[in-house]
Length: 388
Ligand SMILES: CC/C=C(/N=C/c1c(COP(=O)(O)O)cnc(C)c1O)C(=O)O
Image (cartoon, rainbow, N blue to C red; front, side):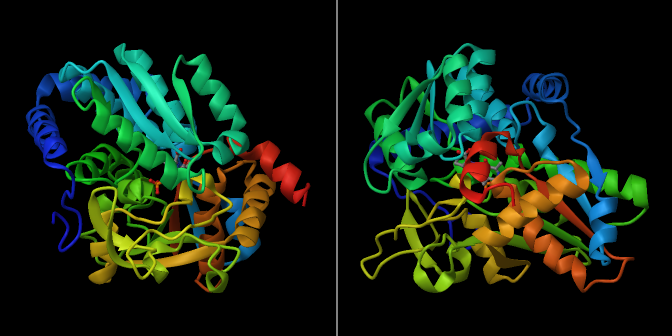
């Protein structure tokens, strides 16, 4: 594998040849000054990096414990962290002479980000999306269409994220020459988990420098939600060697761990193979992925990035959970104390951080990766949870 026993690529031979090509192309361009310059310029002038580091004074004072900070990936162009790896993947596809970018989406953030990057580099874009998520994340579906992407409804299985990945993989296998599968997280066969992590690690590099520059020290705790695991690896990577920094990954316990309506892969899963890679997996006795659930479409995935599986085994990261109710409460709490409406996915990290802060002294600090904004979720939240 590529992360201890985890990762690798379990794919048909014809796809392995293509993956090897992508690995070679990526290793060639990742240090190429022209590529780095083009990506850096787009990060600054198009995405709006560096993203802000914000101290939630009101929320911290209200809880009366540790100081809570947000890394504002919600302020990126397109509204989440996904744009960081989509731009990298789009530039790579362009360099490789591809004609089309394809991907899965659940929350629609990855879909919007890839559609946006495709426009920039002049490539076509097909986005596979479960019909349940198409219904739930309407604003993002509309944005993808306005951006000129083809949103392809997925009606198989649970009609959510895992099924969208299945459909996108099938389409990719049908034509891996003119298309690049710009996968939406640190998942999939090698080199995708490594490549997406490399494009996302700018989050932690910036946050570590900003925190030291502002406060002359490192945060005591860093927290991120974990679906496939890309925003978390984006924040965590720069801090992995800082042993004083405690790291927490928050998965969705949905309606409860005991009744199966969750997606807490690292808490209740075990090693298995899905979508061409080995990692912790919520699976049945035959090794088939179990149906999963989360109030957040972007966390609703039975697998998880292989690097997270290694970080769990070596106990460098503590993987915890947040349920639907406390997550929606946290979404409203952040909105009504700091005027920031988070994505439901990101609100899982806020919910856990609020609980963690309570029992910590005021001198301690918790840095949360606010991976996305809640614009996509506002109708769903008000329709299903009222005004709280
Ligand atoms: C690629 C499938 C996941 C999606 N989104 C996941 C997501 C996530 C979880 O994805 P990871 O960071 O990869 O764990 C966190 N925050 C926001 C705002 C998200 O939109 C999507 O389709 O937009």
